[in-house]
Length: 154
Image 1: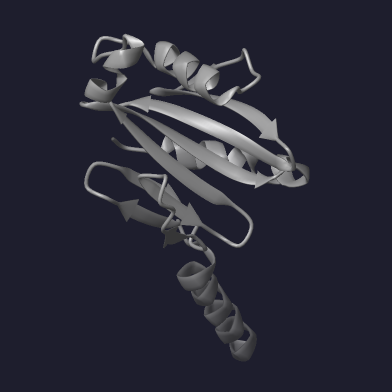
Image 2: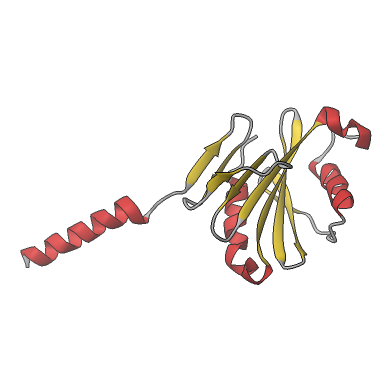
């Protein structure tokens, strides 16, 4: 009996140490996000920051208020106004923006890929964070993408 209890205690300790990982936080100074532990930082020239796992990517863009003045956007503009500019510039075909916590998001497909774009306003810029996976895996990752979006700090 003592042997069984010992095995159970070891199994529980192993689960607590290794099985309950909360994820990995990436802190870039002006941008912070918590993703799954499988993610690593990536380099993609056209993005401010990028992270990837085996099956998903996270692509981060920052648009300063100064740069957005050509679109008549500034620090007084709303998330929805910024999202409309991004949507038009990239030909996204969605009319549905969903408010969640302190950001909005929308989803779209492009070819074989599914995206959730989280849009958040910072002190000096708007941020758009695209979460990407294969289209046929969207139901697997959608909730994770929203959980990751909830962790964004700018």
